Length: 517
Ligand code: HXC
Image (cartoon, rainbow, N blue to C red):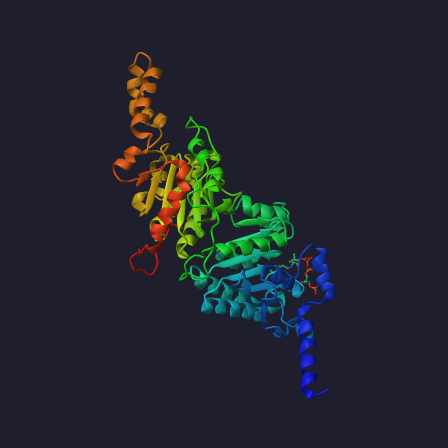
């Protein structure tokens, strides 16, 4: 065998060794826990055969605690690039089979390298987390590595999409890299995120709590709002990431991806002409409206089980991606509260940063009143959504289906927040407040002197409702661009979006605004 062939053989052997990560036993342990390895995950995530791995021969440099005697090719993370539906993405997947995926100095360097490449090439970065945190033997170097990653997360924010999969442990300060990214996908079961684990919680507060109850996928997708998706398992989690990528552009300078649309753009949905109940207090399901008007009913909803009074997600109109924000009358009557405002505000800002038009469907009775909300800072949280809509320069199409009252009318992408096309259904009620509340403020004193106070108030309410509980009063002033037939909503939105394709609007030059955080 020639020298060269010998060297090629050595390379092949080294590659095979690297692909085994922490070794067969560790891989088996990972499988026994119901988890895939880093390389298996990448293979499922990317188009077949598209993965190009980098830094396979990197090893840690630590000599503390006899670490020099134990090292693995590639260290605890697999990095590289590949494609999803033919589009370039950069990936890193922490390899739990190597020191529990814990972050070493060299691991951080590997991750930073692909993050830098993603920024240079203008492509999304996807990180799969499954790690015991900072590599304890490396001390401060591991911390410095995290900080390097966080700084890159911050610089990449709003420039390239950043997506985090949490497919195993993610604890301590390590949670802050995913938290800085645009989307977090968790899996039920073996994944959790928390700043301090159950043992520390017990010591400090005396509280007994399991890992799952402290930071499992259910907690973060229902209570904290940290996770955007809670997948059943790893496969589903990776499929969600692929789908997410299909809706969003590669970077902030690109237009949204356009796919072929086989759903007729002038499809009439007769059911929408009868969806609004006669009683204003009766709910209907906003999902039915969304499903009826978007391309093929295909909706990728985010934070589905968190602040269910507002719905956010990606859809397409005539093949073009949009961000949909919609009040949900079926949950808390679609009221805006702190959590709903924060949820929608972050989504609106993502869409605006990445040139994704916004379609807003309004049926909102107002902000949730009470000490619970006020003490929780609903003023600031509501202002976040107001700010997000007001600063957004992407095309904004708003359809008011029914209620749109008071401050919540303004917040939900009204005309004066630079809404481009503001439509209303004939059932829209655009006013300072609902009829019952309004007459209470205006006529409570007079009613006391009336022969039949209830009758008097009912008459006043009917008078108020006739004047304000319709879209024409707002349309009279041009605050509504047109009153449209509900069954034709899809077509009108598509027309509006087509018209807005050449929209140009820029905000004043500034270092950055000061959104009420
Ligand atoms: C070095 C680690 C490690 C770590 C795990 N390992 N975490 N090595 N540094 N942080 C090693 C284990 O020693 C073990 O090595 C292998 O990885 C697999 O771990 P197991 O414990 O066998 O796995 P499992 O039972 O599944 O438990 C997983 C775990 C547990 C819950 C994550 O390993 C654990 O509690 N790890 C420590 C977590 C932690 O406290 N990290 C530091 C947090 S501070 P062998 O050789 O036996 O296979 C932090 C600060 C970040 O992260 C700040 C950022 C700003």
